[in-house]
Image (cartoon, rainbow, N blue to C red; front, top):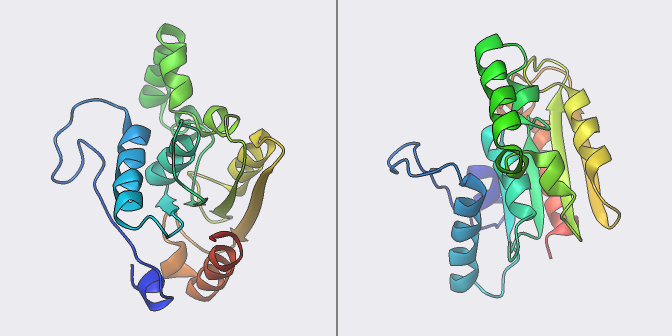
Length: 189
């Protein structure tokens, strides 16, 4: 938050349903994010909107951008996997559960897969941040996401060397700050 406030941006933080203070109702996390963005848009109709997320939040932000009426102008996605299965591949039980869910409910799983929802974008800009030190979401995940982007969607990448999963701003603050603020300055209009 401090990074964005110090740079002159307004920022909103919220919990997805089932996390923090909110009740667990369903798994429609991308819709939750769109609802928050629309509330911000109603309050500040003259300002562009960016979604900034890490890991789970980054996946949901990319998916939300593919939903009708999503007001995001840009997405900054740190440590994002192309799918839940890709993220959980090192953990046999969750990975098997997700593969089973995919077989039973393929349409539902698609909505929770960034590479599928990104194909619904018609425009927009995404900054994908990965680190060579991240064992959960390595830089190859960014390649897979970038390859899924349709024409007209701008993809930029930042590949760090030392940042642990979801800790880019802590582990490589200068690189993170410079790239994120430059990206927002160029694409958030």
